[in-house]
Length: 185
Image (cartoon, rainbow, N blue to C red; front, side, top):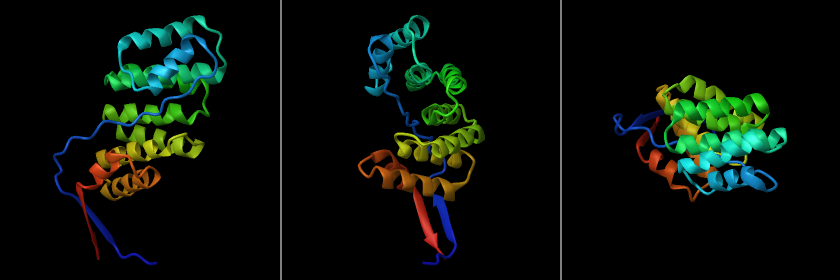
């Protein structure tokens, strides 16, 4: 099917960008790293869980994957509190610990979008999708936010659509798509 030119506009351009989607990591085994993982996966944002993550990083013998995962999980806890700079530092540590960990890139991309460094976020989100992540819909959603921040509305629209296709029951992409009008010419 050949598509003609697609014009996409926002209904209201003064809408604030929505919150980013985060992808936590399961850490295998027991101990504080596992507790950190459970907190991140469970949607916690209380700073006391960051302390558990920090203690795990300082005292537990962790594989490189679990160490990187614990940095990701601690970063997610910070990201939920909008402590973007602190979260970025954790995601940087995760990337340096395990450079092939897609979740580190998707979350670093989300944090970059949070501080309006859209081009950096876009690069990390593309890398995350290239490496593979457990929840690609979150990468597409965050990439849509980055595209929107860079005024690339067509790419933003297509990524919101992809996120919705991957997880149809997730309301955030549907809410964002409702802000767009599409004209085919």
